[in-house]
Picture 1: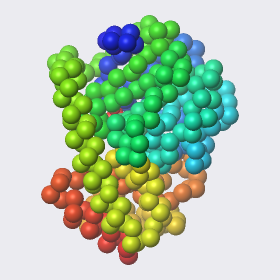
Picture 2 (picture 1 turned 90 degrees about the vertical axis):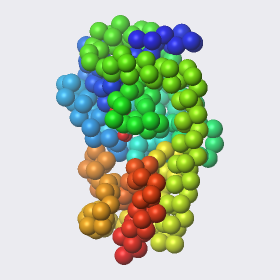
Picture 3 (picture 1 turned 60 degrees about the vertical axis):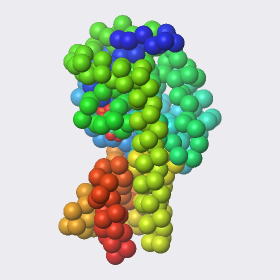
Picture 4 (picture 1 turned 135 degrees about the vertical axis):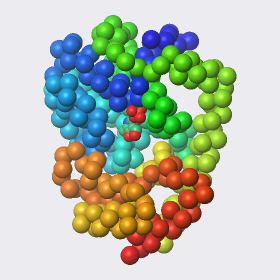
Amino acid sequence: VVVAPGGENVVICSGFAHGVEVLSRALRAAGASTVAVEEYGHPGHRDIITRQGLGAPLLPLDGRGACVGAAGEADAVVLTPAHQFPLGMTLAPDRRRSFAEWDGIVIEDDYDGEFRYDRQPVGAMQALAPDRVIYAGTASKTLAPGLRLAWLVVPPSLLDGVTACLSGGPSALDQLTLAEFVTSGAYDRQIRRARLAYRHRRDRLISALDPIGLRVGGIAAGLHVVVDLPAVADEHRAVARAEQRGLALSGLSWYDLARSGARAGLVIGYARPPEHAYTTAIARLCAVLGS
Ligand SMILES: Cc1ncc(COP(=O)(O)O)c(C=O)c1O
């Protein structure tokens, strides 16, 4: 646990996935039985919650994000308010306020908040209710997912429960290296550089997709966009054709935790291809989608 200059308690963990595990254990030990998650999201995070013996009901989403009314009797929720994962909307201001005023615990997963292209980064929800919102950041998008470094800003009332459930975690050497990177200003410089580079990649991708005429969403932030397709069969066909051309694409249905099939599409990450392969990757993608 590190105490930040503002007095916040920061618990360092091995990626957000480890953080979800620790928080699930702590919430369960404190008597919680359910942690709600957004109906489109990372299936691995929901699995971690249920493996700890908690229920994980789904929060429906519309164009303004999740709605607190749907949280029902849940003890806690995991939200991606700045940039819903994977659909890409920002949680509407009135809904942020409602979640902040809600009785349960909010786990604010700010996985890519550093990469906002249309405005200043969205402020953390944690500032609205520092006693009940656990803010989670990660180095997985800003540096590399393989580092397994993330941080939780934990309200004082939950700190003992969380630290009692904390096992494992990144090596002291990795933590000290990140601390040096942050305090020297190099981390900020890396984010500014990366933001420009990713913005440029995003713009190239959007311009290339434009003539194909498919709806491209979630473009205002992050490292991925969502391309809607007419039906799940088109999605499967696109993923298979892309694979034949050496492109690994994710279908939106993989993130559809309700298995509703309500939307079909592709979640296209633009950070992964090395620079020298990006032009070819876009050309192959357009060939797949154009056909
Ligand atoms: C929704 C979401 N949250 C958080 C993360 C970061 O996870 P981790 O820090 O475990 O790499 C990711 C990474 O893919 C993600 O998709």
